[in-house]
Image 1 (cartoon, rainbow, N blue to C red):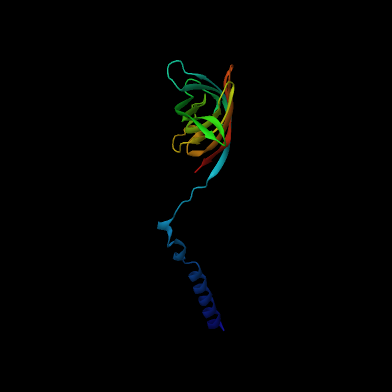
Image 2: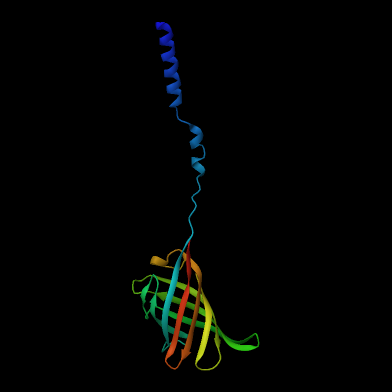
Length: 171
C-alpha cells in the first residue's frame, strides 16, 4: 500500500509540474504586435470678429473665443483670402471665397485650415462656408486633429462677425 501511495504522489507531482510549464503558444506572435490607435472627436465652436489687416490685402485679423483655445490671439489669428470669384448657384449670384486660416489661442494652441465660403452679393452680406483643418498643423490641444468645421456670419457696417461649429477628429 505504501508503494501505491508513493506512485500516486509521484504521478500527481508530475501532473502538477507539467501544468506549470510555460505555454509558448501565447507568445509566438509577440514580435508581430500591431498597435491600433483609437479615433475620437471633440466639438469645436467659436465666435469671431474680424477686421481687415492694414498692410496685407485679403487678410482679416481674427479675435474672439473658441473651444480648446479660449480667447483667440488676434496678432496670430487670421483669415487669408487667396481667390475670389462670382459664381451662380441655383440662379443666384454669390461671391465664392477661397483661402486659408490660422486660429491661435492665448494659450498658444492653434490649428491651420483651408476655407471655402459663399457670400451673398450686396451690403450687408451673409456667408456660409467650411473650414477644412489641415492634418499635422495643430499644436497643443489641437495636435493630431483634422476635421471639417461649418462657418457662417455677416459682413456689415460694424465689421465681419462669424460663428464656427463642428467636430475635430483625433487619430
